[in-house]
Length: 219
Image (cartoon, helix red, strand yellow):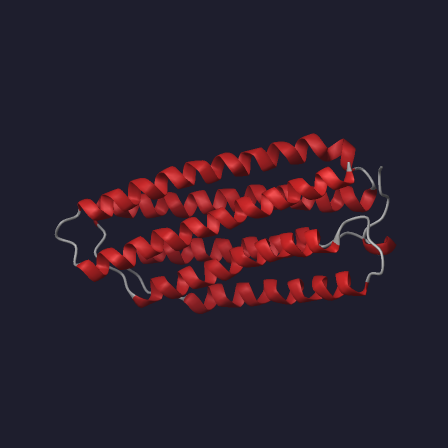
């Protein structure tokens, strides 16, 4: 079945719009992560501002879904995907706050590693946003079948990027524990940084998985 409308004929789901605000949060986190790696002050408030902007869109979508009597998609599935997108922004904000608290001596190897992890997060988020924006547009236009392969390819790429990120996270943790001169609390702090950045990438993959389910329902 090909649906030719969005929420009760009111346009797209706006999941793509929210995802774009989330990506802006991730991009600001990336800027602050690079500053943190360089040993410069982290402006966590800038990430929080982006997260708040994403929250405003999220609330509007939730209200829109609640007020729509009938949808061609299960409301709980839509809201679950929205929740995963929201978690990406929330974790980005948490990561920025954590960075602002402490900046241990990294050394060249860890500097490069954290830069690479930030880039992996940014790339995964951007790929996901491309997929969900394409889904939103195809859903509203009733052209999901025509766009299905393109969206599926992007979802597959998100999954691959998450796997690569996971491997990188393990390497960074191993490097941290090899640094014998690193004070215990600095070691703990850096591992927490890896964990929270890795969890953010995981939420991108979770959102992509939810998007894949929505596609399966509509096709």
